[in-house]
Amino acid sequence: MENYFNTLSLREKLNQLGVCEFMDVSEFSDGVAALAGKKVVIVGCGAQGLNQGLNMRDSGLDVSYALRQAAIDEKRTSYVNATENGFTVGTYKDLIPTADLVCNLTPDKQHTNVVSVIMPLMKEGATLSYSHGFNVVEEGMQIRKDLTVIMVAPKSPGSEVREEYKRGFGVPTLIAVHPENDPEGKGLAQAKAYAAATGGHKAGVLHSSFVAEVKSDLMGEQTILCGLLQTGSILSFDKMVEKGVDAEYAAKLVQYGWETITEALKHGGITNMMDRLSNPAKIEAFKLTEELKDIMRPLFEKHMDDIMSGHFSKTMMEDWANDDVNLLTWRKATGETAFEKTAITSEEISEQVFFDKGILMVAFVKSGVELAFEVMTEAGIIEESAYYESLHETPLIANTIARKKLFEMNRVISDTAEYGCYLFDHACKPLLKDFMAKIDIDVIGGTFEGGDNGVDNKELIAVNDAIRNHPIEEVGAWLRASMTAMKKII
Ligand SMILES: NC(=O)C1=CN([C@@H]2O[C@H](COP(=O)(O)OP(=O)(O)OC[C@H]3O[C@@H](n4cnc5c(N)ncnc54)[C@H](OP(=O)(O)O)[C@@H]3O)[C@@H](O)[C@H]2O)C=CC1
Ligand SMILES: CC[C@](O)(C(C)=O)C(=O)O
Ligand SMILES: [Mg+2]
Ligand SMILES: [Mg+2]
Image (cartoon, rainbow, N blue to C red; front, top):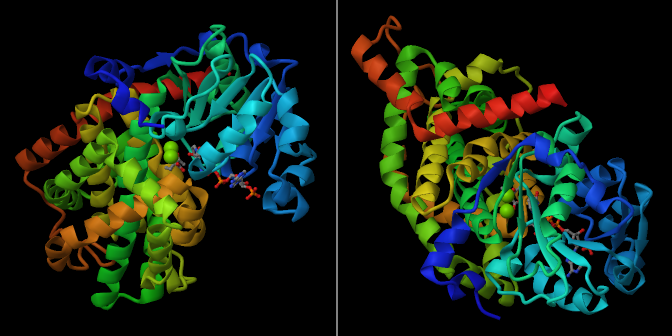
């Protein structure tokens, strides 16, 4: 097998990277009809498997779970999750031959093994689906020609896929049909029905390609979504403790700070997040952001370049073949950071205080979101996709840190995201050494001395203009407006 993306001509690479059409909610008027009465078998019952399955069943689809024999025999969490929720569970041999749609929701690392075992069991003309295209794009998995291959990729952790559905909504979702496997031309209709069954159509569906989804998803998770939140957590906490802030207070400010400040992104983008600061603090956060962007831009570009060339996937797969030595070493090191180990204070921190004492964290978010967006779009990823993979998903990942710090984030995200997160974090922290040496508690954990709160008018106008006119603010405004409009119609 060889990297599928790298087999394409430059023209075809650019074509597939540029596939991105925002689908109007009216395109989902058939709802789940294309899958009604069909047998849906999900392989794997983890973060995405369980939550997507619950949504699909509630949307009227016939869903069961095929688990590996050992998971059934040992009554592993996947088995318990599926059976306690009243789903039929069986082995691959029991269920795969009966399936019209097989949803492969096992970890990416296992896809070649799993697909090689289930493919011969699939009936003629059935459909195989993924929620991330790594196996097809980076490993070049070849799928039997009679099978249709689709992708329905929620831009969200599995837990929020379920929570949003229960609220009567959904999470933005990318759908695609693999151009090499659409023998009957039914892939798009089925992908739309699957997205509707998970609630994604109520939040915004992008008709994308396997290639565009993989390259943007890997970039988002490695940089702003997980990598930079990890780096920012560790550096912010360590700085506060070094400067004498109570460690338990510092731990709370960081653990809940990301969630609180990024909530402002959901409502009004970076503009709104920055507007939550006083004028002098906003100008200071802006300056810190500009410095951070200059320092980190080459690292963001390296991650994008390595993802595009296949170097990232090649080296991660080498680690898979080497018993995950890097992943496990990095995971252990994360667990041993002082931030992870410090209990949090019971002292209340009010919502505004997270902004006022978290100016550095605001700067980390702004710089990471903008850099990820800029570098992705420069590489040919369409703005809407880049928005979902940066600004939109940051608050959803921040929620996981609020639950149980970095451990929870790295548990909930996929194996590829966890690997990429550590890779970025280990490269980023040394890069920020000189920058962090200059940081004091006026921008993290303490009070910003804004004097009499006065600012220079011209400087404030220039800063506000720069914030509001970043391209991510323009695309974000209309995507958020579409989400709100859909919420109102539905
Ligand atoms: N995590 C997320 O929120 C997101 C994930 N995705 C994508 O969704 C897919 C699933 O990821 P995720 O939900 O994180 O996966 P999980 O790590 O949560 O694992 C899913 C399930 O796979 C089973 N499994 C593990 N190894 C094997 C194997 N060798 N054979 C068969 N089953 C196995 C496990 O059950 P058991 O060990 O009991 O057999 C587990 O229940 C991936 O493609 C990922 O990229 C997309 C968007 C977000
Ligand atoms: C951000 C990580 C992710 O891509 C996701 C939850 O969308 C993943 O692979 O887990
Ligand atoms: Mg993702
Ligand atoms: Mg991912």
